[in-house]
Length: 388
Image 1 (cartoon, rainbow, N blue to C red):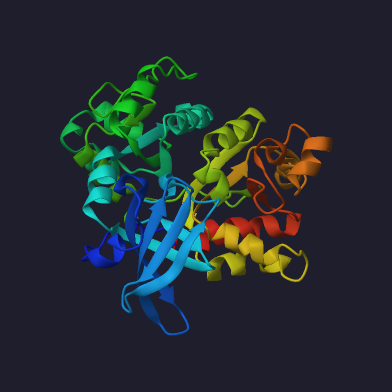
Image 2 (tube, rainbow, N blue to C red):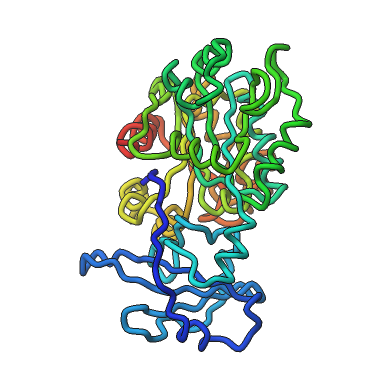
């Protein structure tokens, strides 16, 4: 689902949490997580402790007040993956982080982590990867992203008190825009600093700025309250915006969850553009296991890694991209992605996406459409079926 998760306030079982470790509290962060048990049609609730010292997790069943998972190292999990609304895959269970589990975690992470919304107009699409890469280098992670077409009414709602400028309303509604919700320490100030040094390679009328600045190719939130309002506007359900997918001579690229959590989305987007492709639609999704199985069904019984592929695709945020801009786009983009095995790609196709950003046959950075007859079906699955 692409919907935003809302946080739920719940009481922390303090005695259980304090009894699980003798370490300093600063080495441990506590969260409340939900798991939907489909077989019982129940939401089961757990307290999850994350230990930064060794990247380990521990879980307590809140209803039965007993240990569910003893302290276990999880190589693929980091503190940046743990935030309100995050999706985690542990023990073949898809967990949703619904609240902080103690005051230390709430005060430490809640006060330090800010959210900001970046809006990129079409003039700067080719440099969107550069901007996201700079955000990742500053410690920010992508929560949500979506390419939309704003109407004039949408632009007026977005600008709020600044909507008096007809030029600004016209610019925001003149073509597609990409909105990206980012989270990080001091995200508002850090993004303002990134934009201050950003020089768009676009017509002279396109200038970097913020909502409080002049008309610009790239905008960012000016305050925490503005970021919350803009985030809800762009990523709330249902969306008031029209999509941009063309479904004509395009193919699908999926940036996999491991690449998203590693901050590689910007680099991948930059390489797509630098190789002569265009992006006509873009949106983040959080697939549950059923949706991942449905999308990858063609590989079931064909590749040994099928179950691991399902687990990876449902492990967190993925970024679906409709790629166009060339003749025979499916074959050409498949060539840019390279062999499925990144080790093979690094030997025979060193300049491909999987050679640059993949680690193994499952965590190989991107999925692309393998067969020409599937290209329309895969684009439709994300940009027509899942968005509804």
